[in-house]
Image 1 (tube, one colour):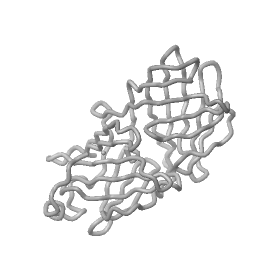
Image 2 (cartoon, rainbow, N blue to C red):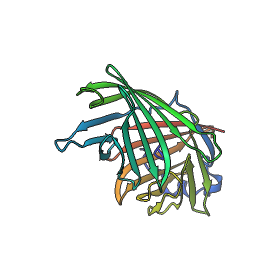
Image 3 (cartoon, rainbow, N blue to C red):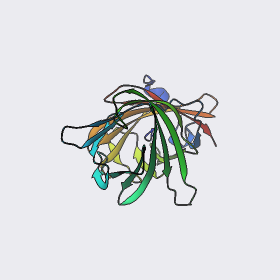
Image 4 (tube, helix red, strand yellow):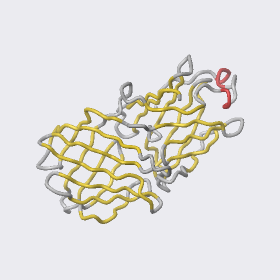
Length: 252
């Protein structure tokens, strides 16, 4: 979901009817959390080595909750540290800069997450989610199922990039590409250097993307604009789990 998806291909004729500039998905969009389905499974386990392992939608890395930085598969880093009884502070970085700070709070079998995404204009974006324990324990160790997510004021901007391409922007993320199925680098301040996206047009009102981590397919997205052009739906499928997520955006 730019990190936030499958619609069957329309005919090549319909895909060529309009230029990118005329396509109904062009514009600026704001996420509608009440219409979206953004919850997923999260696993945090302790390995025999003593390291911890985090996994969500196939995004997997190992770490220790010691405040030190550990690599993530997108080329960024993460650091975890205990911040009191049942509380952890997580800081993710990309290109040496903070891309998100996350506070995790455990209460019984409920894990709450509050993430702050810093913005250059000072209007930081806050996102919250609640997860319920499915198995495991004690503490934060276990398998967790998301029950509620509020994406806050997250937005998406789609702009033309020449006659057959687009520029896709989200908070701290950007990718300028052509509809040729080739991977293009993500160049936003919060994008890991190992992340690329390939774009393909699937109709006059839709396109699909494949996100790669270090050259390996990670996530597939299908973006479809509504007939009246007022809504954009991004249906995403992690390559590893095949569990679909959905982000719905309203035109701004």
